[in-house]
Length: 138
Image (cartoon, rainbow, N blue to C red; front, side, top):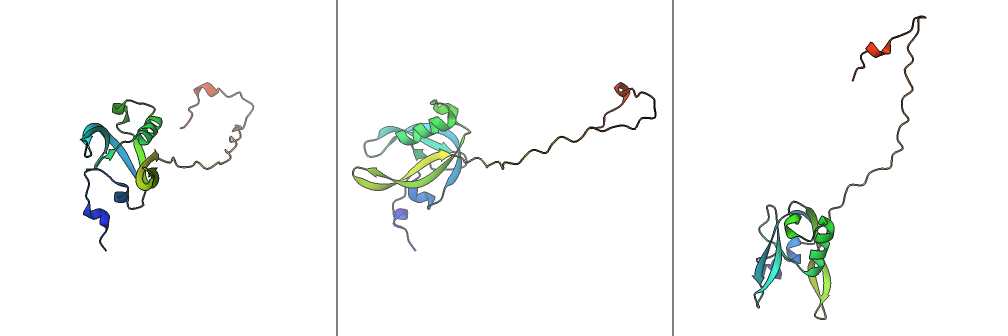
């Protein structure tokens, strides 16, 4: 079945390109490009092994700054982020958009640590043992 979004291809990633899925990507670089009808200079973030980039808005740029710990775009290279489609209000209308969040870290199970093993007691034949010369197997 044809999708109307396929009739309007874009050089940049759109929410509809994500097909309602969350995607983990690794940041490759940020370039500043003239985009839109007015050819306004915008930051575009590109990802490793992907051809389309995402035009950054203030919300997504701040989130990446938070995730990477740096406002310097060259420090973003190599960081993994998650892209996901959602909606936002723009010009009084609800529109699709791409948002960014940190990659979820696997949850660690809360296991009770095992107690240390009891000390090994050597049998004594009445003579003192010189443990300094004993080899300890690893």
